[in-house]
Image 1: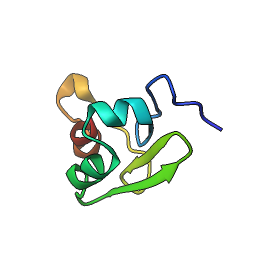
Image 2: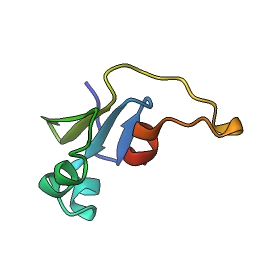
Image 3: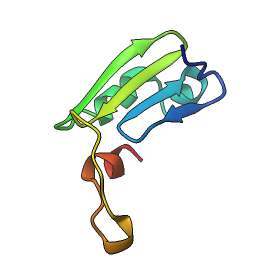
Image 4: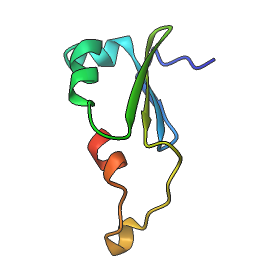
Length: 75
């Protein structure tokens, strides 16, 4: 159980966004529409939306410019 009422919770490839923040972003439907990109999936959850960026967690190296495109798109 994640209480995302205060905002969001993220572990890089999995992100939970609370309803209040979703409304600031235009609502669940708007966020889902913006994330219709390869590798993204969204699920409704109590109090918000769960977002998966990529099929599996990935490791990057932002210090050397080797970021992860899915994580950047979600940010």
